[in-house]
Picture (spheres, one colour):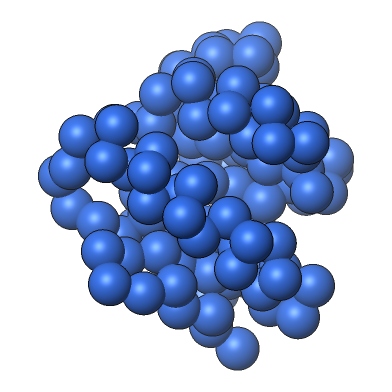
Length: 116
């Protein structure tokens, strides 16, 4: 799977996804780095067939209006990056299984929610 990790998440998430066998970029890898605007993130994700990984609810609004981007929404509130990484690792197989049939998956403290 291909991912594009948004600016408010650490680059190490992209590195970890790459180590897990995926193709992941972070906004720091883009020309405008963390100054990349949401519409540019969406365009790049669409161009490359990437899933945006973000905490930003603006991407949810875009998805609901246009169906873009494919989105892994992190809905955990404020937790440490270490705890968030543990949560992602524990749910990676579920995330991988969800995206062939859905373009919007949400991870919370309690569940992996696959939006139809």
